[in-house]
Image (cartoon, rainbow, N blue to C red):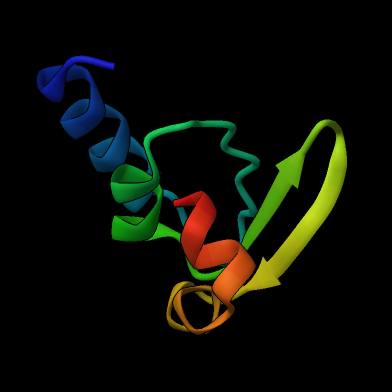
Length: 66
């Protein structure tokens, strides 16, 4: 996704009320880590790991997939 588009998307998501959940499917992990409070990593349609961004970085199999 181009940088300008990702900035626009983050702006819209950030402006949503806190009680709104967002399902965001994206392969740019740096983009996802900038705003996500909780992440689920899928590989071949199966959950590899899930948790907060800092937690995922501490799980070797998840950190390797980022």
